[in-house]
Image (cartoon, rainbow, N blue to C red):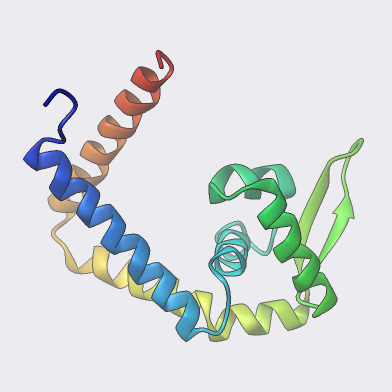
Amino acid sequence: MAGMTSEGMRRFNHLVSETDAVYHEAALRMGMSDSTMQILYILCDKGGHCPLREILALSGVSKQTINSALRKLEEEGTVYLEGMDGKKKRVCLTEKGRELAERTVVKLIEIENGILDSWPRAHVEQYLELTQKYLTALREKTKML
């Protein structure tokens, strides 16, 4: 049948799905939703603050879901939004948010860093290079859909 997934693509899809499942399980273990974990992760990666537009782009989650998670985080005193130029907004961690991130997402980041640090440098570079090559090709070819 035309359109059947190749064995390599099947394995790749399985690995991506399993990786997503591990991150979902990590979020549950930390007592938060996937979108909340992604917001805190991005904020930690960006030094505690980040334009809302960038959070939307990096998370891959719908604008509605991110806005809902942000409202909840604001109500809890974990983040606040501040105006930038024009209508643009920036999301910032509060002190309470920094403490939450240290107990949760920072530990996840340390796990990820530790895994890559345990690999030979050449393997890390090869992994990143191939992942980038796949992403670039996928992005370009899906524009034709």
